[in-house]
Length: 179
Image 1: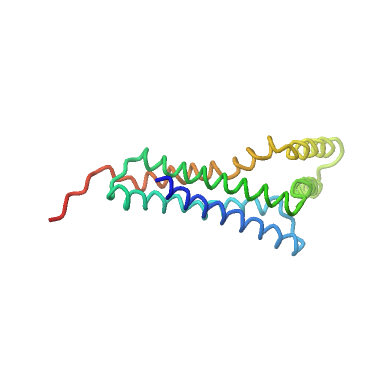
Image 2: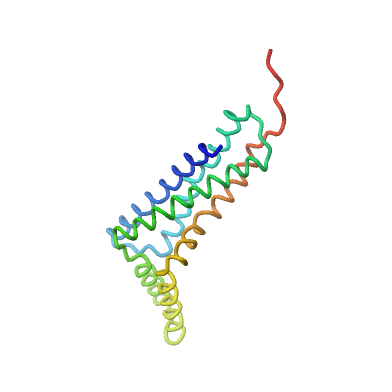
């Protein structure tokens, strides 16, 4: 089971990080902001990539358990795939940030402040928002904050897909022997 989860989790995490990083560079090259639109794009990519959870549960059920699996063991496989995908995602993101020195949080907070300005926010309200963004930027600089926050971006999506996949793929009945 672990080998199946490891393979599908690694594939899923690698797909997510590759597409998101490519999308960030593409949007930046096109002069588009990435604050809001990329959030939706990123979660869509996560949903598609984490569909490997379904494939992992199905493979485990069919190849290792003879077509029989109850909900909770199926959900456990899904959670393991989601956790591995999350760890791959975090490790790849950290590596990307360290190697490229990409100013992600600076770009993100600048885009969020600009969105507030574009929405007509000004004065004390804008100053308070900028101060909030400065606190977020300072917190993100700390790996003890950044690592779990990065994991939390992807893992809940994986949990949801694991629940759905386990419900769909569960087959608690022993199949009759063919003779």
